[in-house]
Image 1 (cartoon, rainbow, N blue to C red):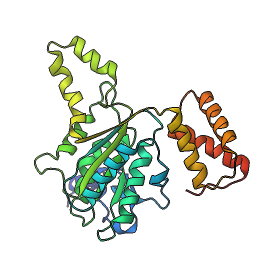
Image 2: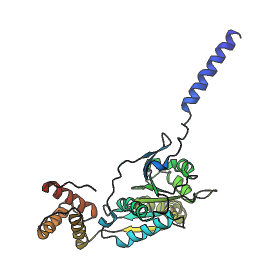
Image 3: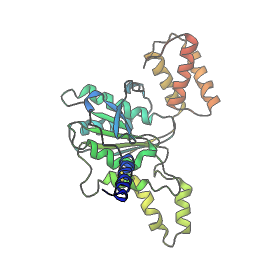
Image 4: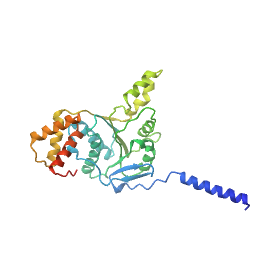
Length: 290
């Protein structure tokens, strides 16, 4: 081999080495039996098991009885292999949207002992573009998966919503039978109102200009709305937590402090009720093991 050929061969070897380093990693074998809840890590193409899930009992989520029952029913049907819808939980902040998703999965797994455990996979908002990869990884599994995105929304010039639309529809193959998508958002249409209004005002055909963006939420067959709670519902949440954790505290004082706490926060919600209960538990020296 001539010197020129040797140099060329060495250059080719270097180029191949660079290309190998640039290539995405091969997906790791799916081991869904190791846990019931996972976080999707697209950079490593793997599902990371969650050892301790941050969730509360379904019975502690108050003031949303109708949507709670609808979500649990939809989740039960999906776990049993029956038709079920993608779900969008939207509305007021702090009313238990994400807590309800995690609690519904746990409740269904506790009651449906005849089926394999239902798996929950959290996918972060910034990883939505990797949904097709995730779905291809789990579609042949014997388990059923809820893909869950918390606080989902899209801003101006954000085109990743197109990946979500394609994933919800499933493209040519259709959405895998063992996959369903749950998302929470403060926005019913997942887009800021000013973004939709701007599209309407500047377009030649306003209705067509916003159709593609607004139609994203139509891919969710079940919309569950969460609204701000009234004072009675708020106090019922506080009472429920106090009873669950066995607080020995005068009811009148409990309610007066809880209302004062909500006033300082400028809001009444399940999250505010929980934050007050945490403060009270700390003052009483009680450990909250949820």
